[in-house]
Image: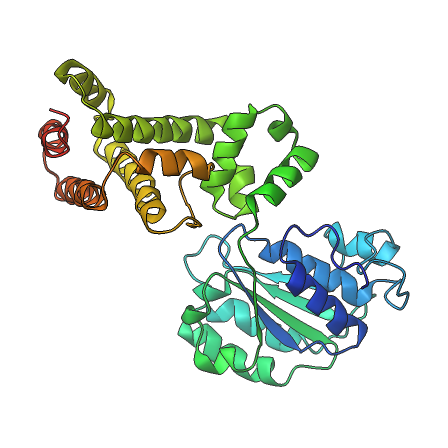
Length: 340
């Protein structure tokens, strides 16, 4: 099988399919590339663009795209005039004005590549008016035009738009592949403690973009502290805790409303994993990087006790949303969870 999109992390089946479509000239005139933020939609779109114009596209022994020919280098460096990005800029939505510019621009043939490619970022934020304005151009573009709509959820797109562009769904990237990529390409990852890097990758939840963002110490240090506190909460709830230890822990929790809400949410993620471990051996965990650690903690609880803890945490979050006194809320949480 021909090597396809060799520098794309994850989504190998999708990459192989796209490689075959490019080689056999079976590409559609438009695609919706769906996936959560950080799942690699932008990278995939750029590799599609490079593959279409790759100077070694007809060589079955060469990867596609080859990444080394002048055409590939020009596209991937962002210097091709034939790759046009459409974005909302500083606005909250992508409006009619941005979309209407495409109508006349598509009539101009590509300058020096095989196709003129429009990459519409945050397509899920297109207003209904913008989507309707886009329909005619999307339905009958010139033969040299390809539209790539990057979208977090196709549910935000009109059915008339979805029916004109097949959906390519990106999947969460396995933790091992994210870790390998970070160590090879991101200098900060090599300088990060391995246990902390493992935590960062777990929090990223399959998003390589999120993992890269979290390598900033300003982001991951507070996050690691919240995760450590969540583990400590679970440990205290599972043991016979002295009043002094419980009071010390409750006092260590954030006193600011928003920060406390974030901490409670982190504890809920932890409890959610423990509940899953009680139900199945192959639980898709979202908090724990180590399934054995999660299973060992889950062993200390019954399912009803975990459900009760979850209810107490949700009640605490609701009190915070209703502007209840933070100290009284913390005290109530400690009592309900048997810590005080």
